[in-house]
Image (tube, rainbow, N blue to C red):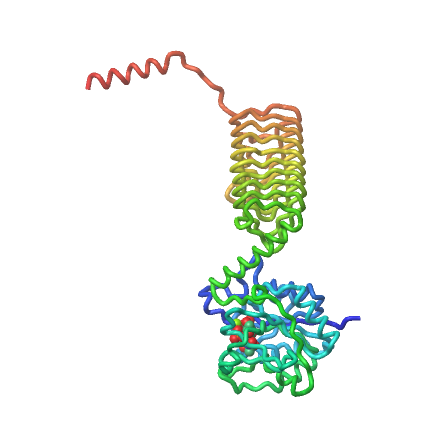
Length: 450
Ligand code: UD1
Ligand code: MG
């Protein structure tokens, strides 16, 4: 049976280079804060305790972390004296824990769960500790993994403390480390800050462990998964790496992306196979799409469920709370919010549907508007099955259109329309014979006499 697992997530950095009022680790990648990525990775590994280490300078990070892992699992490191010092700050919160612990950085959101699982597996099989390493064409700035003739890790040396020969090494430290919790805290208590930065380095536990007879095993990942975010430029690089990964996964699971580079996913986008996505489509968080649907070009979709075989767009906007049944058709310049559409219902052009329930097979004509808001409260509109809403109908909610009912084109509907009835709410047309000819003659005469 595998050992109990815990995670310590380091998030005490100031993130000043982001130049943002929002703390760095709360900036999103794939629509989810970076800190949440780290917490999700830890939970994905089956970590029973997840401790977030943050600084006292950031009550926002503290509150955010506490809302996910609980107040007692947030540790404060103040002042920040290095990564070893940060992990030690978690010791109290981990009191009584007996098992393996992994250290993650909150500003490195793309570490793969396969790599973490491999680290735990290696440690369980061979004892000692495990680090996630990677080969960088340009290793500048990273700690280097110093191995012996047999390729066994001896120690980690930081850029600033490295000799020119050590700096020439391309095998780098990601910072992710996995060890037996008790052994790790024992080694951490021995770490000193006698180095170029005057910091307590977590990486020193590798050398200290080696002297005490512990080996540290290396799992090699790739550079994109260890990408750390310190600036907006790096944030965009992490986003790009996430999008590449997600596009590939979508295509591998049977989704057609006509121009993959222009389709943007969120961390939780769920798309069934045989869905076709045309160019320039953006998925915010909370989107689920059923088999065989087609998302046409230029759609913005968030918090929406789309049924099997549905057709959306081009240029449609689906907002949170949208639930569309099978084979629904939503056309160009249609906005939908907090509304359900039964199977085969349609809104093909220039329509706003907010806070509404639309029955199966109902047809909303061009320019239909649900008037759902009076400046204070929101009201619902109900449209029955097989109803036919004439073009340019304003439905003043709360209002119900019965099953199979019609509304006349250009109507302002303020009262319920019974099943099977026609609701007309507009002034009657009057034709004035000869008016246009007379008017034209009058205008021409005035011009001629000038
Ligand atoms: C660290 C590693 C280095 C590795 C690199 C990978 C050490 C000594 N070095 O260097 O080997 O190649 O990451 O990106 O560990 N933090 C705290 N409290 C502190 C200091 C840092 O919580 O007192 C957090 C930061 O917010 C950040 C993480 O720890 O999330 C790493 O700190 P950072 O200063 O970026 O370390 P690097 O110098 O990049
Ligand atoms: Mg760093």
